[in-house]
Length: 93
Image 1 (tube, rainbow, N blue to C red):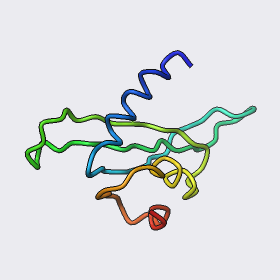
Image 2 (cartoon, one colour; image 1 turned 180 degrees about the vertical axis):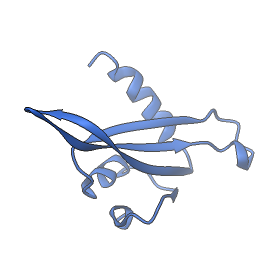
Image 3 (cartoon, one colour; image 1 turned 90 degrees about the horizontal axis):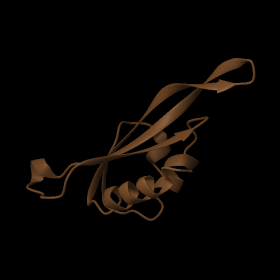
Image 4 (cartoon, one colour; image 1 turned 90 degrees about the vertical axis):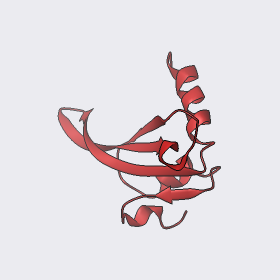
């Protein structure tokens, strides 16, 4: 993947934040002879409202479904304050 190193650099920056905002949204994903509904998982760091000096950034992952395994895997090594909607898939975190 040509952009893998850039994604990894952004991931390291985002995942060092003490607080993250998490959300997912539907996106069309091409499938054999049709279009399925997939998900884009977004994790945003922006500590500027709290006096932070680090630049804001957003990290994206894609999946074919909304199972809790996805945020569990994305945030497995992260700890801090997670701001998210009431989606039950975040409860295991």
